[in-house]
Image (cartoon, rainbow, N blue to C red; front, top):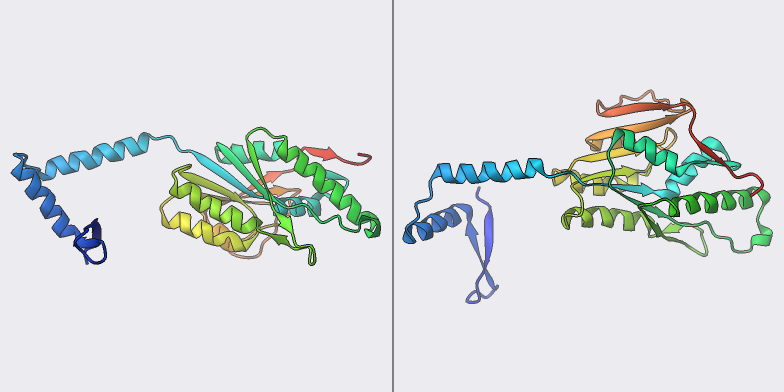
Length: 257
């Protein structure tokens, strides 16, 4: 079955007229011939190969999208509230596996309403989060999107949606031709599926305790940054998944700050 081109046509009630591929091809050849140009199959093939060659020589621009709230929670579970993972160290480790040009970080700060009623553990967690995000903001080349929390439930709002839309938007606008997503949230599988459908290379990166098996299968390549050998799985893992052992991550001590 032929696909169709929709050509502007002011005479049509719809404002356009659908034309099949066969009709379009025939019209192009007829117009060329009427202007004294005989388009041959070889000419068409040479033009396609020339275009493909240019495409292959185009440098890939890779965007990294980080679910920051998920990342902070995961690293806090791994390392506790008195220190946090060095964000600059994390980016260095990621770049060993995937070359990254631009980094986009999405997160929301925990509510501090009624601070006097907060437990000491909660205050420590809020302080750790603020210090971690401060390092992210101070990292050169990182664009930080700050979401918000519901004043009643405390749940994060708008972050996942913003991240998802940015991925699809950047692909359609040609801002990148390869994406990396770091999250353990299976809700973000859909934008990954859209990008894959468009034949754009995709990569997924996980903490050992924030792993989505379905996302690992959806991505062209997937990586687990296996801090302290915490990644354990009795499930069948995809071939494209690589487990990277990181025994001594660089940490930032926040005690006393």
